[in-house]
Length: 281
Ligand SMILES: [Fe+2]
Image (cartoon, rainbow, N blue to C red):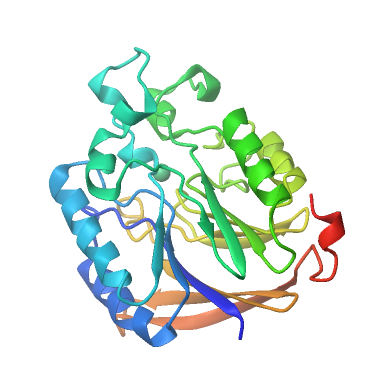
């Protein structure tokens, strides 16, 4: 049997969208026949209606093949509507909610996986302070209440359920030395490890990556729209969970053939064994 999901990179519908790559993903996903397709934020470039409409069409296309799990990212937080003033989450994500519903961090309680989300994208905030405005709007943080909710959900997970957190910012940020985009990222990941997480699915960083840290497998799907002029690899990930094995397959975009090709396969042993339900966090 097994359980599989496709982790799609940040789509950046709008000026950043790459039609060849999007069409290729649309064509490939039905062949993989995944259980879930995950979009971990930054589905738009500037949270415009037209961008959301394109993202919604893509999500509906994916929904023909699988359940679609989606959360908003830093590009979907409309903090600029009330700069530097307190703003409720519903109003900060008003346009996102118009197209994808009110639930910003849904939970999928499936027979083989318990998938939930954390909202790390809040726009400029003291919790993710940076002296550079450019960084402020990109940076995020993991709120305590999200950690508490995740821990509570995972506490009640069934032993056969793999516990998956979808969040936009990477707990293994690519710029961890200089200006990590997830504030206090080491603390955030310690909390997710403590919550009993098996897998984190994230995006935001330009470069895709696969890591395992503290027993948690971290898939960062990167972005379809790299920084201007930068030659960053573009990939999507397929994650297959079978028995006690978590396998992450990397499909890298080849510019010459205009196609994705499988380039790497990472295999990890699940930190919590299937017959070890009594010890689940
Ligand atoms: Fe982002």
